[in-house]
Length: 547
Ligand code: GLA
Image (cartoon, rainbow, N blue to C red; front, side):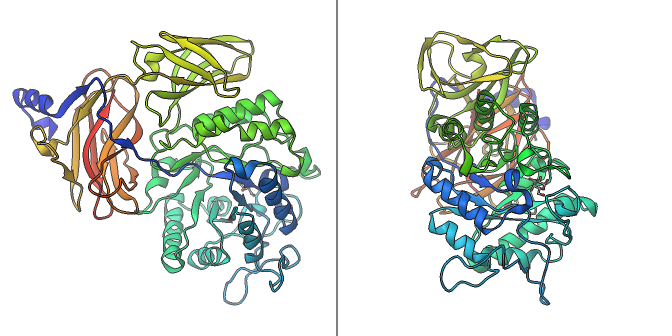
């Protein structure tokens, strides 16, 4: 449509459909589900995981302050099942590894450990593979290799079983799928449907974590597989190498280089929104290999990325310093911020010296990471303009780790960052002016209260959209009176669509805003954003605005 408009009409349209707002019209930012926090067995226990290990770790989370800080999932990774099924194809587990815990329980019932975890007020996670085999036949694990630990051919049966046992979370690996040369987008869509089927039967929702190490770019399809959505998806390989034959699990050493690699591979801000997250892998804080300073930098990277915080250490042996690193409330606030956005690299003043920023829910607030990847200390400066904050007023800067108020600064803040380290800050100022755009389908300036609802077969287009930033934050103002999310797909400049979940905005036609990020053309009003419904009804979209 945009191409067929004559210049005069175009000018009129631009006039009617774009308004620069010095002070943003504020509908409340609607909170989205935060990234998961918890513990996972793999990094420290490999396939030696059993009931006793899990009970000890769950007890530690409940007692050491992690649960209070927000860690809630206790995730059992590979090694819990050795591939046996009964004549009906039901999973059979080793009764010695998973014995009764409370009176009246049966040996070999995974519901035992789930009840124990739930009894502590925590949630339980389980693991399988999308293929016929799991990873045991591929990687060098502790102990023998056991085939057929995948769910292929049993998707509905296995996910129903996980839900019946009471699990809340499922991680689905890709070793078997990879070995069989399967297409991950197809297999994980089947699994998403099996999970939806399970929910329809049991009323119990399994949080769905895809683990295919970034193969076939899951950030392009995981938020939208056959109208079903994965919650988190891994973006790269394992953060710590698997143990090799002849070594002990305790010899598994983390390195900051691998931490940085996982962080870099996780950066897909256009896919991380409305409650869906890029997963840079389980954390290695508290494992052998990192210095205290590197552990803090690792935590800063995961927090500003808004990544899942799944701790891979043995929590019964955590040092007080590592515990403090994992539970700093201000740093956790950055990770769990209810806008649910990822950081974006906003400047690279010199090779290896980088500025990353993540918009936070409080108006005018950003988390800022000054990252020094180089081998010598470096001064790194962050300019308010690059953060989308107003140049006109001074900005208050606070150290996220210590809470120390560092003062008010007129246009930029600079710090010397040690080699291989990072400084994590809060910057609080005023938002820069935004421009609002209205759907082209309105044809004229909207009358007061006039909106367009996305319904079946409808598409709403915002054209001639200008952006100051190559990756822009787009605020979408909408209404959804339902108790659950409504969905729409967004295609920016004809690129692959991303599925957006619009949470409830409240009754009585209340409006809210949801923020997403997207690569945009800068220099001229060149961008086209096309929303289409997925599921009926869609949200009622009113406007979008960006800087
Ligand atoms: C893969 C995954 C890991 C872990 C192991 C288990 O390597 O990426 O996170 O689950 O399998 O074997």
